[in-house]
Length: 178
Image (cartoon, rainbow, N blue to C red; front, side, top):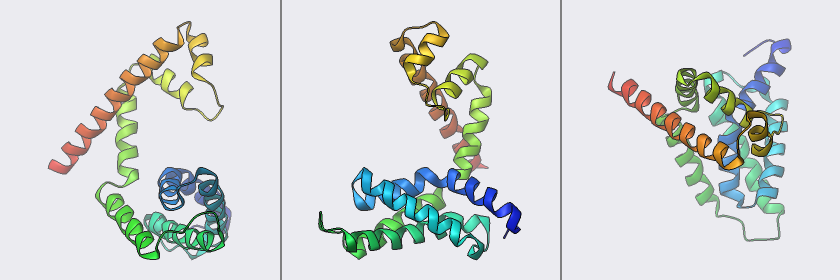
């Protein structure tokens, strides 16, 4: 795996890349956003602390999902608020997540998204960037900056998302046909 100096940036990049998939898995298991946030934070810490044990970058998601699986079980043992999921159900969720990831890895979908984003007109790319940046700009703020009504920005964002979804699907189908 990477050198010690590069490992911090590498683990941060991989956690960012797979954040949604890990969080979705955790949320499906605990069924509560506050608990999912707590468990995801524990998983992130465990991933950072044990990153040196990871053998290859390609194995990151299954490895991190296994850590999440164990943390979900530990969380459910501690939790008295609701009856925990059966460990066999958790294993089935884990296996289903792995099958989905193996069918269409996030990295492949991300590559196709990037290709499709590059094909958008510059104004559409800027709108997407503004609405999905990490600076917390609301759609109202973006609409004001673009001199448009909020409803117009929502409608445009919907059309852009449909275009991107169709483009990604088409590119994945083309890749599968090759």
